[in-house]
Length: 487
Image 1: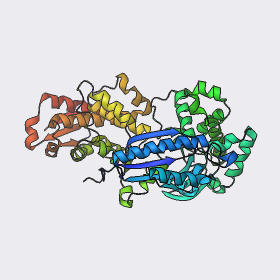
Image 2 (image 1 turned 180 degrees about the vertical axis):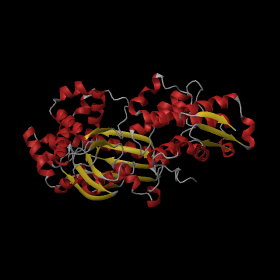
Image 3 (image 1 turned 135 degrees about the vertical axis):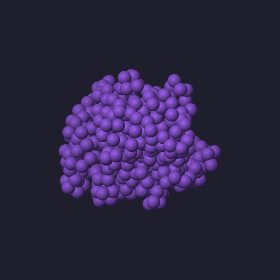
Image 4 (image 1 turned 90 degrees about the vertical axis):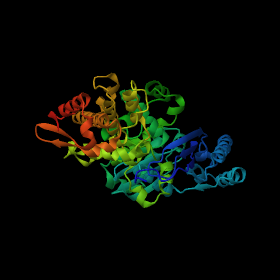
């Protein structure tokens, strides 16, 4: 089994009982890049009354019980044995939280683990780090009941705190002045933040993610994918300030989202605005992973966690991961001297090089491009996705001047566009030469000189030369600014 292949086929489930929603997520197994095979969310607002009554909202309890009954039935039918049910601020703080937990255990056989604020912060941080984000920064998880803040340096958690600044608590304060005072008072408790200004800030939580979607809509961003979406720090602070001062009606009109989505966006933006005054982040980066993935990754052995997130993702998608290694070794000489980040993308591109082979030949390029842009990959930003998508678009004979490729060209600079084209042309040549039997590439190789790209054919590949191979080599050589030659 490859290092990057899934370690198990046994499904694993996480039930997350939060202040706003109750969620079920089923993953394809305990592995380095767990893919979601089923998700369901019910908006219950368990924490809606905590700030005023100290109890769970009665109507919300009824909704949550209905959802948990359904979830337990689904899990039984799926025969999933590894189920982790966790609860955060609402059940942690509610006076009648223990009654709720006992009833769930009695009625559905589900054991709910109520995690403390600092443990919630640790798991959220693990979920972010496991997605291949940078090993240093400030992580913020904004929910209905609380705001978790975690400082990570060199992949180690240095500080963590849970603050009662979730949307339900802020909305319970009726004036903006009272909300600002509440936020500032609690942020002062996290005095360590002053030491970590200028780092990247990684944002999680439904309301903050809604802000990302609003910004994508307003800026007409070409890729509607939240994970790894980022803004420069000062622009992010200005956007938070703008959102915090908009009425709900105005937000609904300008953001392109429904009233349900923007209900707590204003107070979430206010919390971000005041927080950013203190830490002045270099960038705001939205994470598509968090607490639930942290619960998953917390079960992995350290050796598995050390696997590369992107390559683990791509290997699970690859139809022929073993052959892709041969392809990768074969074309590596064309990219001697490139940096480590590019070389990781090159390997990932090779893993995905067979992703669209079973599609109709007229649609392979477009399907490969669109699939890769939104695949559930870990450890890759939007520019990286665009690179992988464009390389496969070219590999399947897509043209740069097609409308399909326009999205990638908006996200990449000219150097990375040129490299993606070269990678795609090299892979196309490899598949043409061998008919997909990539093991034959062991008998062929490249020689790169200052003026020429030479393809050496030996063994069985010597008999495979044809005009189509010569034409493909000329295209590849031209992308490198060289003449082509076959020996």
